[in-house]
Length: 205
Image 1 (cartoon, rainbow, N blue to C red):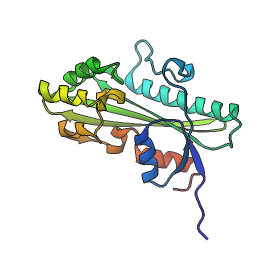
Image 2 (cartoon, helix red, strand yellow):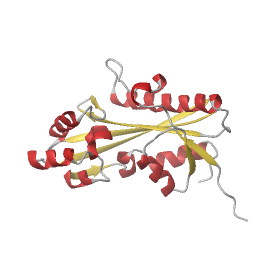
Image 3 (spheres, rainbow, N blue to C red):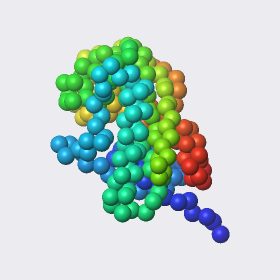
């Protein structure tokens, strides 16, 4: 008889994270948070004054996991592992998150053009009162982008919901000269760190 792995809660709306978890055989249900003007204050992604990018990513991921535990209790859901993550870009020590609008996306991509930046993805796993985190750090180098292709990419609307205004799994792959680190981490969920962390909590991987 084949043992079916238990299910976890994914505290993220990201389709990329859902795809990556499915890729490694993790069974999950999405634990949705409110967004927009009604966003849950516990998962506010605004950086704190002077906060370093790595500290920021770990704090936000931990906050999402902690809020996931709280929602699990409030909604009287079965007790399960909660998995959360946060991805941000570090450009010369500055936190680069999701663009506010198309104009901001253009500005961000102009800054990344011809340069190397770091992609930081923090993973947090929680169960009961225990929360553990891991941080994946990768380097990405963009070739020099011309104005026409940059604006054409932004017009596709692909960059508008992505940290750093791009995703390597989409059209922006043609901008990337070199990657050092975890491709899945750059996509939003580092699978090596995630699998090892889930194992620490007893998930059979």
